[in-house]
Length: 113
Image (tube, rainbow, N blue to C red):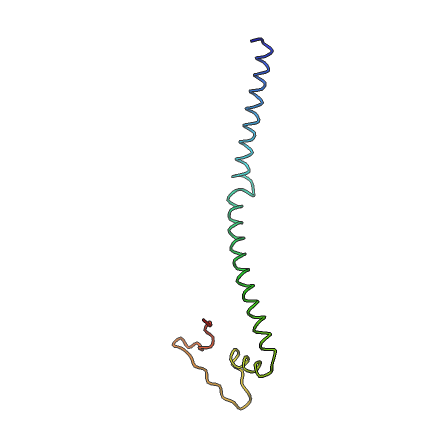
């Protein structure tokens, strides 16, 4: 081989090693050393999934509250019944008896199943 071909191969080998090394350095930097490294990205993704699940639960609760609100505000008798059951409201000169469990908690305050 002639000297010009050897020198061009040497340059090609050097450039290939340079770009390969630069790519490996960049990859290590992005995956482990950067502020948005792989660990941060994965933890943010897990937080996002948890927040999405929480959002779905809250949207279901909002739908239930809206449904209950539309039912209650429809008639005064239902509004009175709801106020008596949920907030233990009473009329003047009326006695209210609250049944409690062994922990001294009203039975009405338990979650409905």
